Amino acid sequence: MLIREILRKRADLAQLVIEDAIPSADARLISYLDAALAQVLYVNPDEARRYARRFLDSGNAGFQRAVGRAFSHPPMPEGTLASADAEIIQRVLSSSDPDVVFNGLGVLSTLAQKNWRIAIDLLRHANLSLDARLADRAFMMLHGLQQDILAALDEDDVRYLLSELKPLPELNGHWVETLLSYFSLHFPELTASFFLTRVEQATASEEAFSRFRPINYGPWVHVPLRFKESPRYSAVLQSVWEWITARNTSDWRFEHHASALFEGMFLPIDDVVLSFLTAKMTTAEPHALRWIASVLSHADSNFVFDQHRMVVSFLDLCDRAGESVRRKAVGALFRSAISGVHGGAVGEPWPRDIKFRNESQTLMARLPRLSAAYELYEILRAHADQSIVWARKDAEALDDA
Image (cartoon, rainbow, N blue to C red; front, top):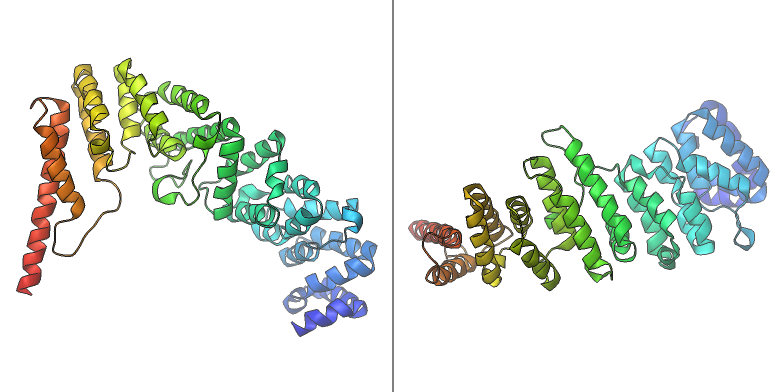
């Protein structure tokens, strides 16, 4: 720290460090190279740029990282960035080395506070598709320090940023999720198209256990998408449904990713989704009923009880559509009911199991014994009964201990 402070005040020493580092590539000198180069940049900008180009041409990652850090606070008289500095920053950000790009992203915070348009234009050169951490850091610099920048993004900016995220296997990171959440509200069609493309990418993968997750859903969601708040919500819901149901559920990869897509974009089920699916199921062919079953498998665990009228009507339609549709629908709704986190006191039946048993029995009393709905609630009651038996056995084991 002391050496860095001295270099910030002594341009002559800073230049000596640079000159000594060039022939030796000594790691100890390189660790101070960014501070030395930053000092020379303010005292003798042309000389610093000459050194920076030399370091970038060297192929030495240590030199290149130092350039990225040194140019994170370029001189910006009256909010303008010299074209020579912009060219050097572009080279850093477009590097194929993730560490070099990471070290160069710091400039975005400086630019965001002085000239947001320059920050966005330079971001277009950043090789964010190398690693989700790069995208997360870049968006933190823009959104975290100058939130008004997001409001200034136009459709071309959004298309570019989404194109950089498209190849990433997973959309991890708070700021990546925050950006996608913002886009889903203000650019819903572009954002929906982005997710559909990622589903196609994941479906095309031949890996048995692919890491590619097209959209965050379930436990992977930390910042929810905001399609539901958009005035275009209903239109996006309709277009996504048409896109999904144009394909067959026999493609298990597509079914898995498309159902997760529906959850990430539109669930939990609200009145709009409920009305939408109810309207679809009344005129649905067996193919569409299978898709409704697939998306309902992602409903919350209380759905089969809170919306039991819709569930009964849906299962009646599936029953009439044939045995395979009935099996799929009953299985999908059962999975939705037993999903999620639940628990209770050790040695006591879990509250959810008691609720499921009691509510299932109530509904079964009103249903024909051979109906698909009766089968569903009978399975749920049996599942709850078994869990209650296990809880009591656990209690007995505790007493014996």
